[in-house]
Image 1 (cartoon, rainbow, N blue to C red):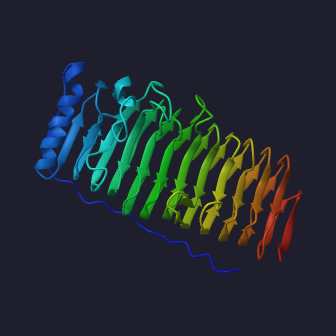
Image 2: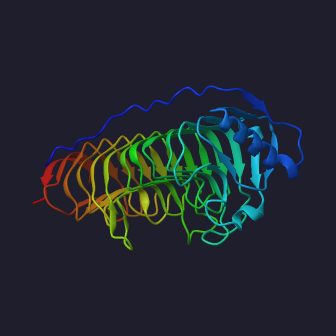
Image 3: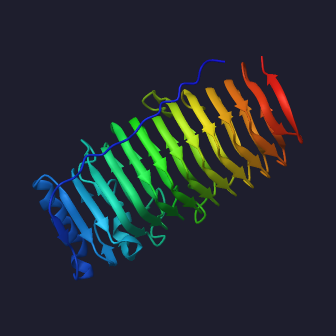
Length: 365
């Protein structure tokens, strides 16, 4: 089997300097206008901190964050609720929070310690409202944020140079929970809770953490539960109209818990559309999912090791049309369709506990 090279990376952000503006005691009509005016002013000054004290803020227009800005709330007591009019606007103005220059991009943005409640307003692909969206950004953090009941994605990060961190967020009852795609640099998604995404409209979405066309990504320590489609999906992407493929290489999926997710299972590695290779899936618990616990389709050059996959309605671990993957030291028991099924060339199945005994080694030719 070819060596599986997993990129280990540390992501740092610059310390943002600037004055702190306090936004308080303004009417629903003026709320968004006051917040945006302060964001714009600090953006012109080169950066700073905008602090939103506890309270409910009715957002009439998308908040657009310039570079070098921290948007900080007072925790779960700072609640942003969009007006239905946001969903009636065209992209990128159908987001509650968006970076200021979605075409050329922004950098050094931190969004933290607040709640976005979409209240199920709008409908995905029509009048859907997204929670947080960063486009063409780098060196950005989203942390300690609750995003719930958005008819679009809860958190969407797309394109850009990378160095993106999404951590310690609760993302529930959105279309997809966390959606990250087409980023050419390091991404870290850690210690988030993603649950019940897609439950309201399962025909449109339902993935807890969805990563497409990203190279150098680490997905660690998350809990993905009760999502309509899948807990975690990592895949290569493609623009079929323009004939562009977006490979997905160098992925770590470790120490996550995926329970009771839907038709795409607990963890799904999908190489249908573009090259998807060099991965380490390690130390995860996948149980009681409607499909397979851990499965890969058309992936190669990886390791699936030290996981527990039990009581799933599909296979515990399934590889289809996949090559040069090592399955080792997994506990795979009591799955309805079977425990381990491997199809492809050069795969090795070593020292796993399934069929009520430890199977020493099997290699596919």
